[in-house]
Image 1 (cartoon, rainbow, N blue to C red):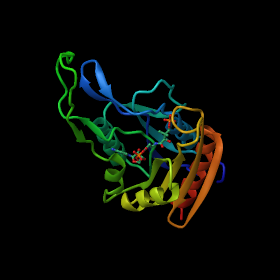
Image 2 (image 1 turned 135 degrees about the horizontal axis):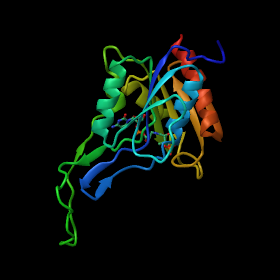
Image 3 (image 1 turned 90 degrees about the vertical axis):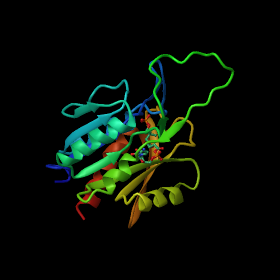
Length: 219
Ligand code: PMT
């Protein structure tokens, strides 16, 4: 039915930043409040889905009836995503701002400021979305892309390269939208179409996204 387009579906969502430890007191991270991902979790639950929300460190309360599984690092987010997908998943939505690199070694003790400059070797983190989209039993996968220019080209490239069913391009060049704020403006692309949503509240955008995901997943 139109009011519960995800009835009976299982949805897994990643949200928030990841944190990659440098030493016991420092880390590398990205800007992300988790608001977009939590809004999608709330919308999907209201649309009738069973929702698992894999969340990096954020200061938001869990939406009603949504199972939150907290993680810190990209590696933990990948392991939690693979586990949740293996348990059963129809739609996977990656809103998380994952750190692309992590320190090669985590110092056991606090690093002392003894020299004027320091180099920190970094290694690539796994791509969670591409890993899930590449599975033999891949669910319908939805990626996000924070772009500042050539939004359509970069976003559709990412969709094809990562073998996604849908990509949501964020206009992060507009002040007051995107990271951390309550509002956003996005353009959604799927292989046969596109739709621009907003500027509007992240919750209103999430509600519309859930309808589009359900429509495309049912085709
Ligand atoms: O959390 P908010 O404050 O509400 O802000 C929301 C947001 C701006 C963070 C969100 O809407 C958003 O755009 N998230 C994606 C940020 C981004 O730049 O992603 P990306 O271009 O690095 O990655 C593309 C896609 O791959 C994303 O779906 C991302 O979750 C995923 N990815 C990226 C790297 C990685 N190692 N693993 C991934 O799964």
